Image (cartoon, rainbow, N blue to C red):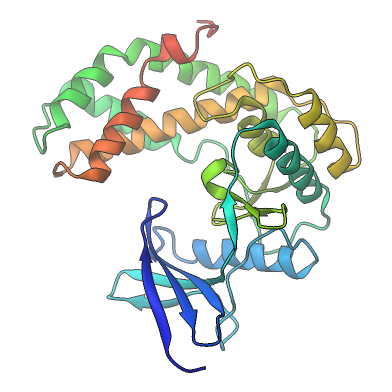
Amino acid sequence: MGPIEVSYADVGRGSFNWTAEGVDGRRWFVKVSHKDREPGFLDRTYETAAALHEAGLDFVHAAIRTPHGGHLRGPVGGQYLMSVFPYIDGRNRTNDEADRVELAETLGRLHAHMPIPDVAFRLTLGYRIPQFRVQIGRGANTTWGNGPFAEPARLLSSAARPGLERLLNAYDRWVARYRDDDEPVVMTHGEPHTGNTMVTASGEIRLIDCDAMMAGPRERDLRLLLDGSHGGPRGLDNTAVMAAYQRGTGREVVPRRYVMDMLRAEWHLGEIGAYLASFSAQHHVDRDTVADWRAFTSYVPIEQNWPDLAD
């Protein structure tokens, strides 16, 4: 193969990334991630993406298999895992209608794919909620003081607690309703936002960062497509987008608003709990903690983010 030139790529969050190029011009994208909190999680999600790609869904961007058949190399440095992907010559998707239409048809094809790979995880509702309950309880009764954002985070979450409790109660009602619903699950990407989707030089959509792929309600993907962000509905015109989605999936679909609200609530509550866990532990000011604080303060104003939330 000969020498390979490696260059650091300052893109994304949650991993370290490089591009690599051989003397013959071939290019790869190298990703180094923290080891699983849950052993085997990355192995299964990477294998799910590979199974879908190998079944003909070429828009699912899967890691290159190692000589041993897996997708992860390491551990590197004791706590990291490395994966290598084919390089995509393209750009990140935008929220312009043309890109959203292309993504909609692609997601429709993903959701229509059967059978769901046996290796795929099934979405477990509420898996992030216990952490949220613990962190909100701690915030009301303790002084943290382990870093610059500790006390501001505690005070902000304590002041927002009535709204957070209302959101949690609404979430519980949506979950109970969902469990009585008989709509079948589909294969979902999980986070098809602009940072996790690309458009190739030839105009084709690629789903990247597929490490949250699970079988679940189609609204798991549709809420980001139709609402436009994790924050909530942005009043987008989705007429052409839904027409493209139905072309891709081959059936008429009416997204369930309550399911999109349920999944958005789970995301908001889970993110708030994770940020509180981070800010209540020892931390310092750096680029990541500043970005975390900005995200945290965007999720906490419940009345602003959920203006129609009932008691």
